[in-house]
Amino acid sequence: MDIVIGVDIGGTKTKIGLVDQNGECLEQTFFRTQDFPNLTNYLDQIKITSDELIQKLGKEVNILGCGIGAPNASSKNGTIENASNLVWKESVPIIEKLKERMPMPMRIMNDASAAALGEMLFGGAKNMTDFIVITLGTGFGAGIVANGKLIDGYDGFAGELGHVDMTLGDGRLTGLGVRGGLEAYVSATGLKRTIMYMLSKYMVESRFRDVAYNDLHGEDITKAAEEGDEIALKAFDYTARVMGLALANFTAFTQPEAFILMGGLTNSGKWIMEPLERYFNANLLEVYKGKVKLMYSKMEGKTAAICGAAALIWEIQDKPS
Image (cartoon, rainbow, N blue to C red; front, top):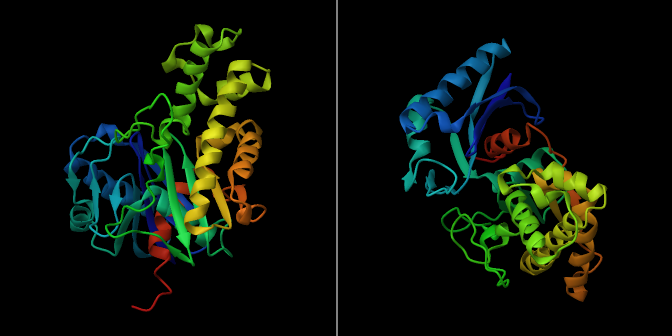
């Protein structure tokens, strides 16, 4: 039985799973990334955890390789470069070091780009040649596919759309220090910051008047919107307005058939999607109107990131060597 090891490296958790050719995650687990600030110990833990999963699967398997999704990953260099949410700074030669422990074909890519490959192989973009995956978590990530090929870039860092300067008045900083950058407005973190902004701008009653920033959670904001809380509704509308303008601008780059949305912010459902569709269509150039879909990922859930990482290896299996 052929399988691929998929590794999703996040600032909080590292998720590892065994993925078959249909995109099914047969076994999965995670450990806390922050428990291993020493890179050597961290890489050892990936090896240990992978071996444990294979043993747990209890079948004879042929491991085709290991795919890794990570923030600020260079697919060309096999490195992670100065990721803002990881403890290892500067350039981390993760492929070189992990291959010493796990000698097998191995690829690494920005996590949003890996998600785009996963969506193309296993998800809702199987029959698409032009689409953009948008990941809406702590930050804003993008994986861009055009003419059936992932846009990887000269050095493997294409798709950092979350750090495009939106030149908005208050000039919030992104995780990479871009003032006015998109992810500072359109992300789970951005939504929380917008709640605080709306509380200072409007004097209407709101359940969030007595809630500290660190106690704000996305599900609470969604529930407040359902109950008609004006601050929550204004925050979603503002977030959608910024995002709608951004996606309309991005459409001009590659004219995607669809933007496929995934990540925690999408759990807000109609409260984000309905105003997003309105602002998106209002900002589109006339030639694009009615041609670009906004849709949810078909890979949403606990295994999406793992399967996206595994797709890095499955994607090359049918290619000539």
